[in-house]
Image (cartoon, rainbow, N blue to C red; front, side, top):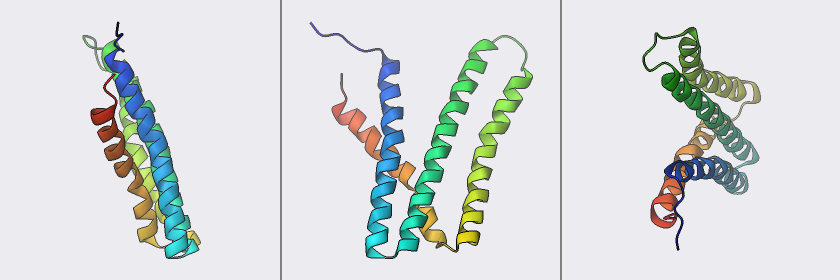
Length: 138
């Protein structure tokens, strides 16, 4: 007898997998950059990956709040909570840009290394999603 998990559980596993894969891919890329290019490049990649991981966690929390707010106010008027949630959603990207600029300027790290670290989320999303589609069938 097989028991099927709810669909929400599948998506939660994918989200969780993307989170930890972002850190693993970022750390691996940072170590590779450290060994093959320079320590400063490796540090830049690690900082970029850490920034995008923090943003991913922020985005998950804000998205959950948006969904809860939408469910709560399907027929009612838009509340002030909705405006605050949308503000938080847009602020996340601005914070990454400001933090990346300050880190690159202050510590004199190569900008491309930080940008490469930011790509860890995209790589993690691709790998995590492919794993889910091909191997996580239950």
